Each structure stands twice: as structure tokens, then as C-alpha cells.
Length: 126
Image 1: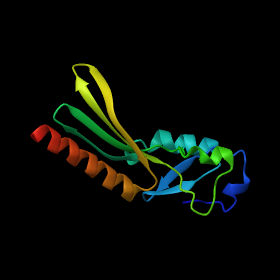
Image 2: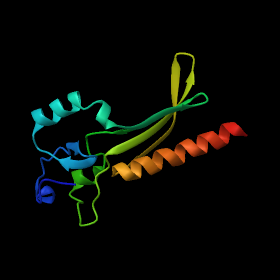
Image 3: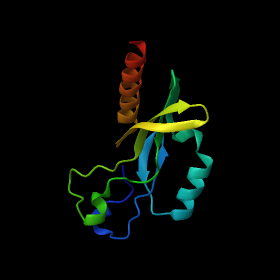
């Protein structure tokens, strides 16, 4: 998941990642990262769907949300948190967040989305 072996040694690392063939790749190139985010909007979407009054969205965040990196806690088992699934209950023009979960890989994101979607499908089916 990384282009660098020195992530543990860089106190200024801002946790930026891009996707290459659905694999997260760490980058320190701020302008390249920003350009990739702008151009890869559709490539960042793992899945989005509506189930009844709920909108469920799973996306690649582009930033590491594992805040342990700020406290120098990057051991050999460190995993960046790069994907997020959110479920919103839609009421007219208003959306309310009902579920939010994060994970590290595209495959985990697909599994997370499927599990959450199944839970919502079961809940609205009675």
C-alpha cells in the first residue's frame, strides 16, 4: 500500500493516497495527489445505491483516517484507513447520517458496503 518504506520515520507525512488499479498507493506529491482526486472522481466510488429511503455510499477517501499515525504508532500491523461507507436516511431534501464505517482496502470496502446494504434491505423488508 505504499511507495515508501519510511512512513514510520516521516513525522510530516500527511497520509495522502491515490488508487492504482484499485490498490491504494501512498504519495507525498501534493499537487499530483490533488490532480488525481480531481480527475478520478468516478474511480473513487466503490458503490452507491438507494435502498428504500436510504442512500448508501462507499468511497475511497484519499486520506489516511487512522489517526494513530499522528502519535507515532505505526507498527508492523499499521493499516491506513482509506475507505468509508455512509448510509443516509433521506427525508425530502434533507439527508441524515445513520451509519458510518471505515476500512483499509477496496475488497474490504466492497464487503462492508454489501453487509450494510443487506442490513438495510432486511430492516425495511420487515
